[in-house]
Length: 99
Image (cartoon, rainbow, N blue to C red; front, side, top):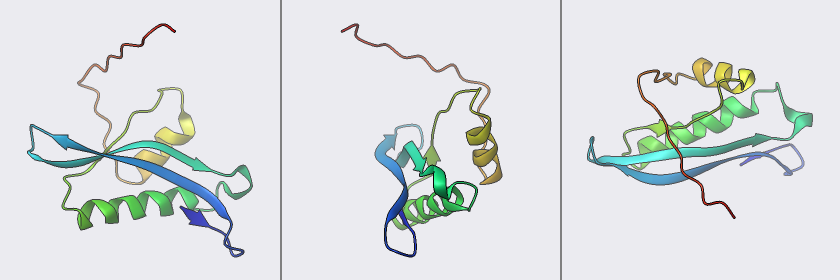
């Protein structure tokens, strides 16, 4: 979580611990990153990602993974800027139950 000077939450990142069977190590899935619109473009997203990287090191994980839409220009720029590598070699599939 990121807080402002009044200790109000202005953003959060949601991580899930998973296991990489190919690396035989813990891996973190970055599932959500949210920053209140009044605090965007102030470095909050970068702060949250850097804290997530620290967690990876503290837990001896092999890294962070995430997925975002190709049309998410802000997110794609952010992840590249913060050192993530885009994997263009794999297909990602999903299956959803029709409710």
